[in-house]
Image (cartoon, rainbow, N blue to C red; front, side, top):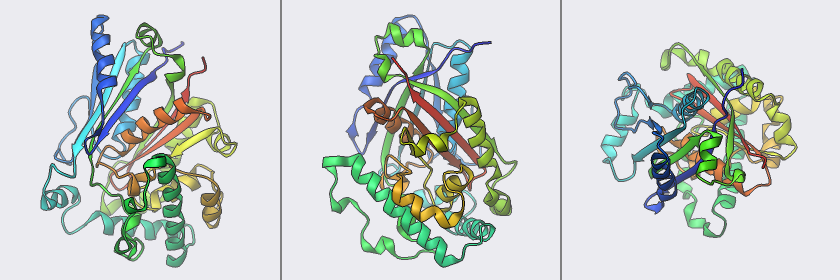
Length: 357
């Protein structure tokens, strides 16, 4: 059976009041004028109770945008004309500092994310025979990699004042500096529009602006939190999500990336996560080779959550929007976006491809 293909035909965001969603929302109005009613999927904001059951068509965690994309793809393949995925969270101005800290303490105020991810990183480094000094050296190479991508993404709008000050380069745990952690302080609204090919044609969207959602691989452990760190640190479920996406897309992404025909946005909340991705994907064969790889290849197109910032559950949505724009501009044709939920118990990998006109 041949499924109807799903295409991202428009993507837009607004950050700290800069940018506009008008283009996407105008297309949504045109879809209604054509007599179609789009499905709407939502990325939950920080204010949503982390432990509450997820409502229908709502998605939560850093993996949420990839899970929403998977749902959108299935809806389109089953005949839906169009799907909207939207996320909005004013982390910077919508909460007091105390409110932010309390809401982000999803495992309790005695178990902050920085400490739990440090425990996870210790378990990971032990699995790969790395000492603390090696791990922290790799983290420094990661941040330098993000800086290059961030400069490139901002182009003429970049200036040195946008980079973290020296105090953020000081250790905050045994394995992390401030710059190694995601910066959530951004007011973000993002929106992507996914349609069938016939709807995109009726909207007169040029085919070079279509991104085919080739594959989405998802994997989730049974539980999350401090008691499951050793299981998460193996990242077998990330490997499963990655291999599932590659199989569905009928491609070896690592090989394609190394040839220069693909872009990558790893999830960069803490260094352990992109390190794990590089290893399970086969982009790097052994941990000791991570620094060399990072000197040769950009593993984000945005600068990651550390520099481009990450609005709680929305970083992968921001990445999907950025990937749509970058692949439209070429010359690469393939993009991979990674999502990581909770301490890492949810993993998602999406592979998209610019439509060949």
